[in-house]
Length: 381
Length: 208
Image (tube, rainbow over all chains, first blue to last red; front, side, top):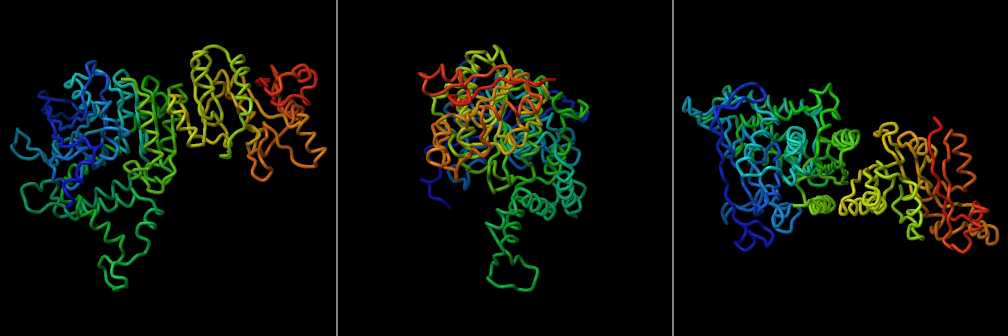
């Protein structure tokens, strides 16, 4: 355990706690299925100014949640998932911005999701929880903004599937954000990407512990499937180069054992990552999140012309991609850039040379951090 | 594009003329926009809009810091992500000589822009000729400050060369201006541009 002194650096937002916002009425989702109200868990950092013009929304990625920065208790081993970017004096400066992040609808960390008890049946929703989409997430975030009295975000920021939410925000609510930061993202994912998601889903659904999604009342749950899904995901979030750099062909015991134990360091790493994840993530939520990722394609309603989908956008865009990211490659970001250029929208774009793959968007890469900081410093509040 | 510092010996005298040649409210594309100074000026003085393209990360950072929209894009690969005639003015200042295929880019400039503004160091400038003739060495000057082995300038040309290339490619020159850092000889510069013009500025457009 780290010592008490090292837990909160001077730049940390410190001890934080989540808030909850509840919608009572029945909501029709993009799938045309309904949800009898829902709760959204969220956290905020910094102070909303008098004009309510300094609000910044962070949209989280697949396995993320609303706990972006700071710690819930002084004893938390780790701070929020983007603590290195969010805090006083950091690129997302909480001295300037009132930062909000909500747990996506269907999540498993406080917002209504498959592991929430359905008041109608007094049982967890489980597989009955409707499919949610990026559109639904953004709509629920817009309701949260209404609740907080935020008419217009100074900026909406997100990486990966969080970046898709940023794009959706700018399409669905062009007047409700002035700046949009889309990092390591895409206007839609490729067949290869859908394929990875499908293998992850099959790993979960074919686990006997899954039991058709009804596993909340039994001791058993699809731990193996979720572990496998995460292991697969992890491979795609890293690059060949960074794996070589991090693990090489290094053996844990320095020799071959000629068996199927985790002999190579990379095997041990993946098993550890997968198992840790499986202990605090809900398998049904994982299925939902990957589906939302697969479905997102705002150009589809516009004859697959992305520039038509983006024609009413008003936000100024910053897009960032990473050279070694093959899950959300630079070319996918460039599709958005080109569509914005085609319609004369204000856009800046940088392709950051980084070996860390898709995970880069979470890491302390100086050029990336400086760029994000500079862009957000330009934002008037 | 090479990362070597671009020569800016005139404190960018060429910018003044570019400003004169750019219409008000123009939609502008600046190829190799550097730190965005020119664009930012045009946004303010001309109510212009548009983008810079840049590959140097420090310059790109400077653009973002000053709020100039900038795209990381290597112009050596062309402008195929831009539509025909989608900009009022496409500008390239003192970097066409650094490109691997300047002819291709000139064609791209007049395709994408209703007009193009091209500036480059004139290799026919008398000091360059003098150094080669008297010392037998590759010229170095304020506009061409690099050693032969480390220069980013791989396609230097004279005014005459440039004009011939335009003619061959059906590109119309609508304005031309030569400047030299020694303004005392302005009369000579206008009389013998390829000899006394240190920096060449051309306004070009497609001949249709």
